[in-house]
Amino acid sequence: MTLSWYRAVRMIKPRFINSLVLLFVLSLPCFGCVRHKACPFVSPTVSTAPIIPQGFGVNIDFTEPRPGEIKLISEGGFRWVRMDLKWDTTERESGRYDFTAYDRLMAELELYKLRALFILDYGNPLYDKGAPPRTELARQAFARWAVAAAKHFAGRDVLWEVYNEPNHQMFWPPHPNPQEYIALALAVGRAFREAVPGEKLIGPATSEIDFKFIESCFKAGLLEYWFAVSVHPYRRNNPETAAQDYCRLREMIRTYAPAEVQSSKLKVQSSTSGSGGDVVARAPKDIPIISSEWGYSSVWLGMSDEKQGQLLARSWLTNLANGIQLSIWYDWRDDGSDVNEAEHHFGAVANSYHEGRESVYDPKPAYLAAKTLSAFFNGYTFQKRLDAGDADNYVLVFRKGSEQRFAAWTTADRARSVKVPLSAGQYSTSLHTGLDGGVVSADERGVTINLTAAPTYIR
Image 1 (cartoon, rainbow, N blue to C red):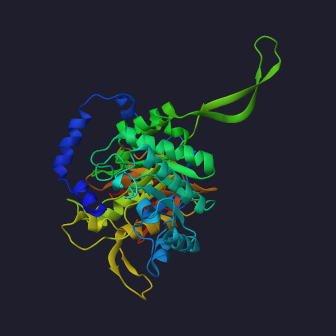
Image 2 (image 1 turned 90 degrees about the vertical axis):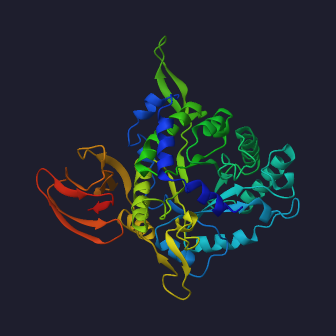
Image 3 (image 1 turned 180 degrees about the vertical axis):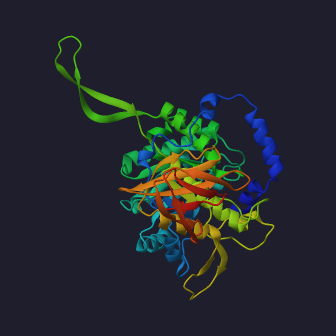
């Protein structure tokens, strides 16, 4: 079985089954649900939001890019690539490591100023017969290999993700076991702290946002070693629904995050003597959330290439508005052209390679959406969400210095006109794929905007 087969099977469920499952789950009581439902769309920690497009990336599945491929990725506004750094292909003899293929990939990425998120993943036939590392011998071998990789690429701003979707049986057969994963992640965390303390670990890269699995990781102390928490927020419904999950996850992080010194010393007034004293301020460690894999297949029921492009833009905008530091789109290119194979159609570009052409792959609307969002808001950061009259309507404000730009759309079934409270004047608009949307005029009450499911950008 291949990874592509797995993802196709996982994602191919009919929509009505997903809906029934969702309704059943929502009917169940759960810890923190009241607070979860009350979570705001906009995160209170957006001051740490990345400058666009520095927090945008894409998943790839190769170490040998074709001529022009990395250039096209860069031109699309992607600043990161996420790629498996596979144990079995880089340690073929016990204790001997060969990262040559990844050296070539890194050289190409750095030529275009792209950064790498390498996934430390999967088994090795040299240990546990290729099963996920679940014995102490295999765990320590995995940790030594992970440290060797980190030393090899030290100082090159790589993010190191501990495994890929360990909560799914395809990647952790015969069935997921959080305690086995925790033992592995702790071994890697301790080894990194000892040997490469300057390198940044993230995890657990769960399939969807598996709160039970994630909380087990937090209870075991993995936040002590992780720079960020990574999740894969796949869903069939609107990407805006991820806001509630992020809010719940952030609360969970705050609950379990280890304390750290927030400022060196604070002057306080003594209650007895009236003299000043030095007190060290401690608070939970600020651990960001990373969306390290998320996409929509354009052949899912009710989907299309055009809608896929809309959802790329909306998922990234949702992430920005919720303080998500990094948004990795799945996938870079279509894996094939079979209309009955969902896995073939996650790409931002089509499958066929065109040697010698300026654009070596045909851009899909998803690629145009990534490129447009990155260019239109280049250098901007998310500021706030405006009141647009209904919870279904989204008008987000982005700022660069004294300049503001806006993204507007609705999740409603039909287009609707809304009054947006902007200053009087004229504004130019752009569609999310880069087409000119014309000019709109605002009076003293604001500007009327026609909102659809496709984001409109305003400046």
